[in-house]
Image (cartoon, rainbow, N blue to C red; front, side):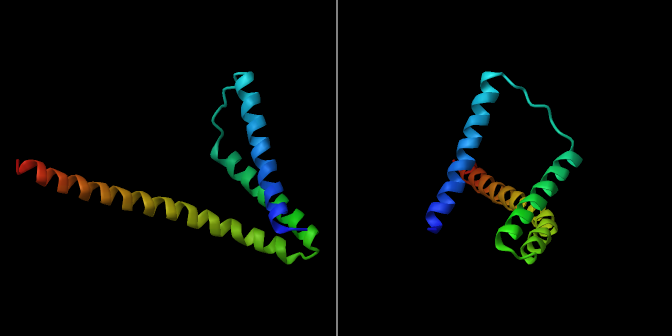
Length: 108
């Protein structure tokens, strides 16, 4: 199977599912309730286990599941670290930019 057809099919399926869910939510005027963090983490863990199991069954290799499960704690550490460092860098850049603009504005 062509790899472009495969990834195109996966992307098309995800995009179509998302569009259908959004249209259904708008038609029924669904107002989502915020979920608790524990339920969000459980859903993510379940999705990783299901995706890893499906991939390991398709590849006929249990090591694929191990790599998926290894990626879960790595993502749990790296995502917040990336978000925090990005936020700090953006705030530092904005503070510097506005300080420079304030200096130029004061000279007028």
